[in-house]
Image (cartoon, rainbow, N blue to C red; front, side, top):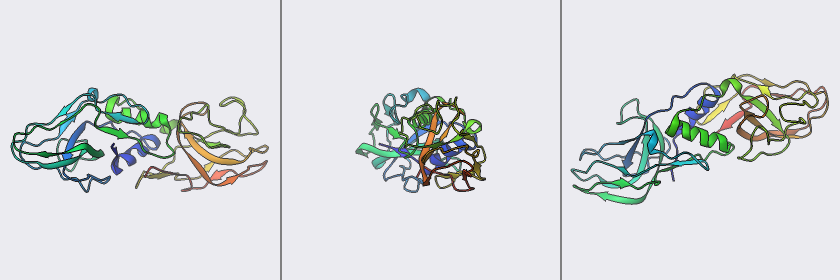
Amino acid sequence: MGSFSNQLENEMLDHVFNGTYTAPDTYIGLSTADVLDDASGNSEPAGGSYARKQILPAGWNNAASRSIDNNGVITFDQATASWGTVTHWGIWNHLSNTAEANLLAHGSLSQSQAVENGNTVSIPDKNVTISFNVSGASDYLANTFLDYVFKDGSFATPNATIHVALLTTKPTDAGTGTTITEPWVVPGHQLMKNYRRQPFVDWKTATGGLVENNTAINFKNPSGSWGEITHTCSVDASGTGNMLFYGRVGIAQTPTQGSRVQFSADAYDITVT
C-alpha cells in the first residue's frame, strides 16, 4: 500500500485552494530501501540497464474507495548486472533523477526481489496501490484528486468557488454539500437567521502539508441563534456542491443575534500530514 509524498500533499492543497497544479506524467522506479515521504530514502539501482518505467494514464485503474492502482503488469528492462534486492517503489514525475524530478507517491513491494544479471522484474496487475490517507478529506476529493494526478487530469481547481461552511454535527468522509448539517433549513435555498456559507479565496501557499487563511473569514451577523457550531468544512459551491475538507472548530460556539462570527487570519488550518 502506497501513500502520497510530502511534495504531492502540498501540490494537492495548492490545487484546491490556490490554483492549478498540472497533472504530471508518472514513472515508477524501484528502490533497495524505503523511499520515505520526503524521498530522502530513495536508493535506486545504478547501471545494469535499470531505468524507471512510464505508466500512461491507461495504466491506472479508476480511483475508488480512496485509492488507485495499476492496470496491467509493469515490466522493467532485463537487468544486465546486479540491481541488489529491491524492496520498495516510488512514483515520480520524471524519467530520471534530475532537478525537476519530484516524488509523487511511494510504497513497498509485496515481495522483495534480489535482482541478478539476466533477471526481469515485473510488478503484477493491481500491486501498486496509492491511497489517499488524509484525515478530514472527503471521499469525493480523495477519488477526484487521485484520478486527476494519475488517470485523467480533469479536476479543475475549485479555488474560485470555495465556500466555508459552519456545521452543527460532525460530517463523514462520504458527506456532500447536501448532507452536511448547517444552520439553514433547506441546504442552499432557505436561509436561517442570516446564515450562509462564506466565499473565500485568500489562502496562503501550502507548506509542510498545511494551508491556512491569509486574512479573516467573516460571516454575516446572525439574526438569531445558529445552534452550537462544532465543525466546519470547505465546499465548492454556495449551495449543495461537493465537500472538500472538514474538521472541528477550536472551541464549540453558539452564535446568537448580533454575534461576530469570524475565523481570524491564520486560524483556519487545513493539514494533510
